[in-house]
Image (cartoon, rainbow, N blue to C red):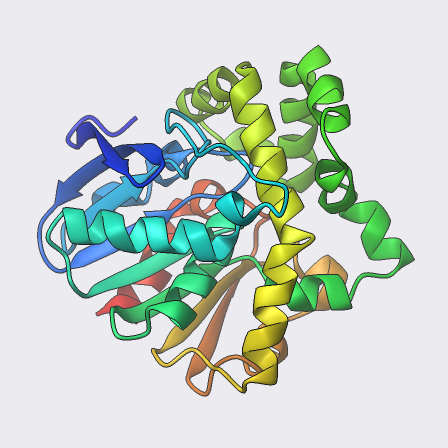
Length: 291
């Protein structure tokens, strides 16, 4: 998917990460979402690599990365723990300060990374999310049905694992088509990567634990940050798909303004998979912000 990039495995804490690196210039960490892998960046990365040294991991437990064993409180898959893992990864690669972009679940990890490691994150691009605490707070009947996976994946094991594992190809195709504005824009190479990952029970289990953390400990951490008046210190740019997020809440900017005093937005005419449906426009928005 990224032929000019170097792939390696790097042990960080209790995780063993599959990481792609390439390009030249200041470091830029790219974090993928659910139900994807680092392959989601394959059309955007070559454009970014002309200006930045890219670090593209599969998140712990996703794709080809091995995640930690989970605990009863889901701390191992909390965004705080994963953010620390990403910070340690960048230290391992020799990057003290870096730019940061995340999509979907990766954007939630990046949100916590920007809060907890403010001295290291120079700029943060959040792609097609509102923060987790606000996502739950705005949940009503319509949003609960349209975003049912938030509740379903957080159900205690092994129910969602058994149901997804009975036909992972069907489940994955259902989600991708449900969230995409233009499913045909997703390349066969990236689809193959996602399907290969979800055919492994350990990936299904890890990704469910990610959502279980999102329904529990992540909310606790985010509420504590809000109560303490914490805000993201670096500039933030929200890139969002008008065919997905706007159907539920309109522009996400007012929500993000509660978390940042320096935030702007770019709305694109696509569904949820912004970097795959409109890679040129997504890359332009990212480059304009990161410069």
